[in-house]
Amino acid sequence: MRPTGKLHLGNYMGALANWVKLQDDYECYFFIADLHALTTDYADTSQIAPNTLEVALDFLAGGLDPERCTIFVQSHVKQHFELPLLLGMITPLGWLERVPSYKEMQENLSSKDLTNFGFLGYPVLMASDILLYQADYVPVGQDQQAHVELTREIARRFNHFFKTGGDEVLPEPDALLTPSPKLPGTDGRKMSKSYGNTILMTDSEPAVRQKLKTMVTDPARVRRTDPGDPDKCPVGDLHKVFSTPETLTKVYEGCRSAGIGCIECKSWAADALVQLMQPIQERRAGFTNVRVEEILAEGSARAGVRAEQTMVEVRAAMQMR
Ligand code: SF4
Image (tube, rainbow, N blue to C red):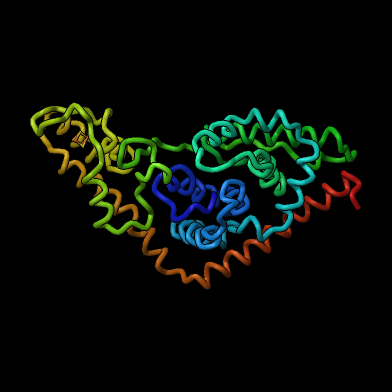
């Protein structure tokens, strides 16, 4: 996860909540991708360190447990600098230019100059992040599948050039597709920091209720007496993700018959969010910054040991001794 600031409910439902489940079934590595932040925020790096701490706090608050998984900072594991350089030597430029998000992000972030080498090469950095741990699986949503596919191609090319006679040095990882429910922001578009429509995992109860009050609804419900359709309403989408089946039934019946008003319906959605977020916020309050730094240092040391095992094999295969 990139350190772009405090995480929002879209980050939580789209990734973190799944990761929390995975930590019991797999040996998991989760990291804060501060080097990736540099690929776009190279001109002003002042927020990367404070944001790294915020994301780490959100990881822990969300339920990642440093006893059951490894949580670390990408730049604290120096092998994340070394492997991308080596893999960059064998990655054809055309592969990078074809990555769908390359053009897309350049257009979306038009206020930034993204003609830099680091940005073009970020899929190599991403491939290294995965291959350094000789990972079997990468938990991703549909939109990230192209990156895993490119990682597989880079691994295949490496293994083809540098045969060792034993097992392949860089096994091709599989995508572990994780469910990421549609989560709208307050303006009805996908919840995203760049749209300014987020509900943060750290938002207080009054802030959540206030944000819900201003949330857009089914445009067909102009007056209280107009029936609406929760399937065409962003608040309805929130209910589908967070509310109990009983509340959901009340929403569908009440909305379609104009039996309930949007204000009431939104207050039920806010209730569900507050209930979800309360234990998360309590856990967050239990961590000091000093403790978080310790956890990151321990995790980075552990990740470094695992990454070095891979690098020993990589250097030997490339005859870089
Ligand atoms: S009643 Fe609820 S689901 Fe229906 S339009 Fe209003 S906010 Fe949306």
